[in-house]
Image 1 (spheres, rainbow, N blue to C red):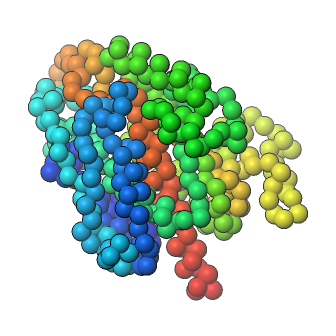
Image 2: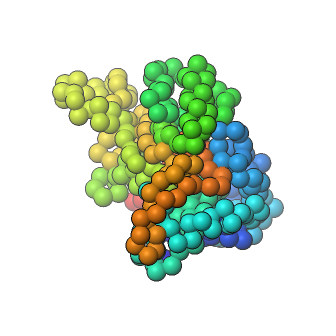
Length: 356
């Protein structure tokens, strides 16, 4: 299987399956001399882990990360950082009913047709459990990017949206509720909606908005390696993501150029920021902001028609522990992937300036 690594200079390779012994990763290219805050790394994992509230999957995993290399006395050595997160609450029997059945809108069918074999226990390698390893690497990338601030939050659940621009939000309130929405009134509506959907044995989608501040001018390349293109790729690699837009996004397609242009101030900043902090694929120093759309979780606790390995249409019903809405647990994953992108481009920019 290819495609288990992300990044050029700051590179993450992950391994492991949802119900295997463990999941883990190797971070290659992290600079030496970075003093790590292990408590903060674990805090990022705790934001993503299952079982943290009544509106997420009730799988109980401590998600404690163990580091095996690349760190000496709490400081990175510049060698590969190897780490493992053990799976301690596997219940493979929850998936025995789908051993020979392909769940609708899951990777079951495509995975088996491509590789000729699949680990049906929780989706195996295609499970969102793999994203825990990204959060570890992203937490380290955040510490490397000490001056850059990355804040993601739940901006919609179903038809319930935050109706304020991000500049009016207090990001310190994002962690004050289980849905991770910094607007308290909207958060209450979102939580009630997810609880309602959960009682129905159904699931619901939503969006995560991410704001990146204090980004220097000059990250990104103007042709294939555009900064927004890499951010889009990173976000679309997250399980359940169906869409990505940055800056004015699709709303910009409705505007005239005279309305959409970000006019300059004398210091190089712009009066507006419909460009979303990126112009010509290169950061311009303004806030980078984007939105990521997550589909409803495919496993529903209702009877649905499915296809089995014998080519027959059969009736199946989801069982086990699943998220009624993946969005609140996706918030730290979005931040982590954004941090990996920026860490990679920061090192590339450093390399460019040294070579120049």
